[in-house]
Image (cartoon, rainbow, N blue to C red; front, side, top):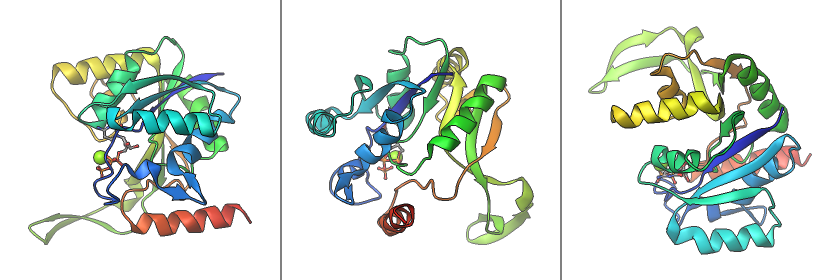
Length: 227
Ligand code: CTP
Ligand code: MG
């Protein structure tokens, strides 16, 4: 079944420290933004992309969409102060009753196979996210003192995309707005309207480019994929 994807791309990349939006940095001479968009551009099940963009980047983004012949972008909407605001701006323009994916532009390594696995689950349950089991021993810490060791088998690191039936996602965003809740992902908003969220096992390669070190991992992943 087809889906539409919202791609928040309106951040400033402060932790990357590149002096510009990290999505404009290049990997193998292609901007990160384009790497991410290509996965959806090439997926037949993707009906359209809504991109949230910082107004300061709009001209450059339009130029890149044209240069790399990205055809599926339906709308460029202005980003907001937080990631959540950017996604809400995009969500308000969506006219699609089916499944909506939300995927960070800063995660260029998502594979089509995993998108489809997620999609199948979201069709079945209304809400599904992708992640990987935690590998490290995890502890809660306060003031640099260990408070407890958390049972690792129940901990997962969460990624995007996250997939939801449109009506559920919209209801979750409206509810969050009403109660002034800001979450670090979309699932946390859906959890607050008490809709169960399914977890699909993804891939450790699906990293988010956040700090400078991530660019080294990104090069290694690209090299591995190119065989
Ligand atoms: N994002 C957005 N609107 C915002 C903030 C973030 O659309 N107001 C997007 C980013 O462009 C990115 C995704 O949300 O694709 C995940 O955010 P993050 O990795 O935190 O990126 P930045 O906010 O750009 O980075 P930083 O927090 O280091 O400034
Ligand atoms: Mg951020």
